[in-house]
Image 1 (tube, rainbow, N blue to C red):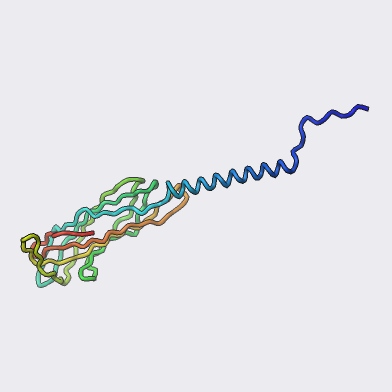
Image 2 (cartoon, rainbow, N blue to C red; image 1 turned 90 degrees about the vertical axis):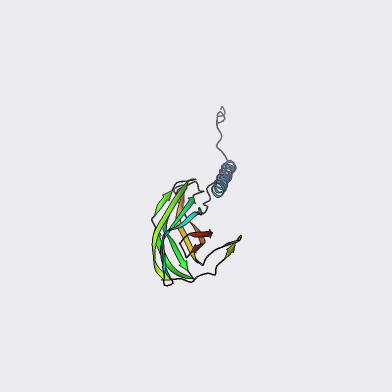
Length: 191
C-alpha cells in the first residue's frame, strides 16, 4: 500500500496562535499609548488668555459724595486651543471699597480655534457713596483726589476636543482702576 501524500499546509499549532495574539495585543497597546501621548501634548486643553486693553468712563458725575458713571472696558480674548472655545456664564463685576456697584452679563459665544476676539462692554453704574483716596503727587505734578474701582471680568466655558471630550476652561482678569473725581478721567489701571 502506498503512503498518503503529506498535507500541503500544516495546521498552525496552538503556540503560533498564541504568539500571533500576543504580537497583536502588544501592537494595539503601543497604538493606544501613542494616541494618549498625542492627545496630551497636542490636543491638551488650555485656558484662554484674557487681556484688558483699555478702560474709560464716557460719562461721570459726582455730587454730595456719591458718584454715577458709565463704565466701558475693552478686552482681548485669545483661544490657544485646537478646538473652538464656547463661553457662557461670563460676567463683569465692578467693585468700590469691597462692595459691588455694577454688574453685566457677557453674552454667550464661540471663539474659533487659535483665534483672538475683541470684546467691548459698556454699562451704567447707579449712584453710590464714594470713598476718596488722598491726592497723589506724580513727577512734580499735583493730582487731585481720586477714587479706585476694581473690575473683575470672568469668562467660563468649554473646549470640545476631537468632538468627543469636553473640558471646562476659564479666564479671569482683575483690574484696579484709578479715577479722578474732578472730571472722571481714568488716571491709570493695573491688571
